[in-house]
Length: 474
Image (cartoon, rainbow, N blue to C red; front, side, top):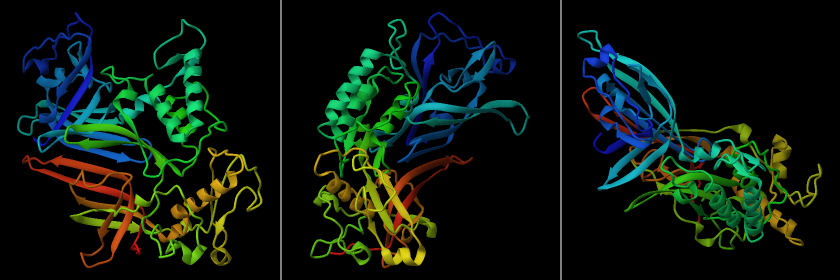
């Protein structure tokens, strides 16, 4: 495990308290009283780790971490954040934070960082003597972003003020006003404002405000719109994260998720806010600029001006594929696509609030299979319908003929820096001469295990959607 470093951090006892180890079993390795001052204490548990795993995804809970520890009883008192020795007995609890680091060419990259949500405890028995000699722990942890999932309330009483939890009405009004004003410029700017102001209300155990710890990443295709007046916010007893997602991710055309960015200096967490990127294959163009594949079914799609020309990069190639599987589901068929807006009026009649894109022949054969979504962020007078129609065309890039695209998993050798969730990837189905498959990574899991001999094995597993064998045309 020299390559990885696993650390547990937690709040130490208050100054002046002493915890005595008086358990008869623990006394076999010495009585070790401990005194800690209040604050954050961190312990490296790499030597005790037998396996670890972390995953990143586009949807909640976004990031998850796990590891298993085998700790000699004599070392149990060091496990700050996992438990405490009370009345001579180790009592586990889940209150610390888990950090997984990896040494990459001399630079430590953060693979996971977040609060521990569950601790499973047991004992190990010596095979020869039958004596209990080790404490066995399994840890589960969730994303650093989860600190925004703590409850809060707005109060008008000055006596009920607790940073990040009980927020004064004046402070909440100031934040809301700043977000609404910035939304008149653009929705991405409004989100950056909300992240800066709301993120400052919650801090990590180190005391660093969340808005300083993580920055916002936009694009490659910006979220469209500049209005949030139609958003229905959850009640004030909700969480800050539910307020953020309800305000800025009211349509499934939008992605909002955390992602780590790694550089030569280390790792930095970011929050990605963008429109869900379409398949590279369906964005392939003919000489007249029309979509090569979608034109076969739907005719020339409306010009989607907000898709940048430089978006058409090649997908990232996954190497050393050990296995993969892809499923195709006929119930995912989509032959009618429509994006609506609360400002164009509500109607049960097709084509009234906006102009749908549909495949009449497919509907006649298989029935109506629709994808519809309301997009509440566009209000520009005189161009609402044009903009909504543009989004309908964009939604067609994402959902048309969905039954022809698969979902699956790809397993490779351990390659954590090849691609990440939110990337388009490509791999060969049978060999370099076969037709490549393309897919969009929705989550990725990395697993590291140490066997009884000390040998380390590691694999990476990628969950993909919109898998196709279509190749880009020129």
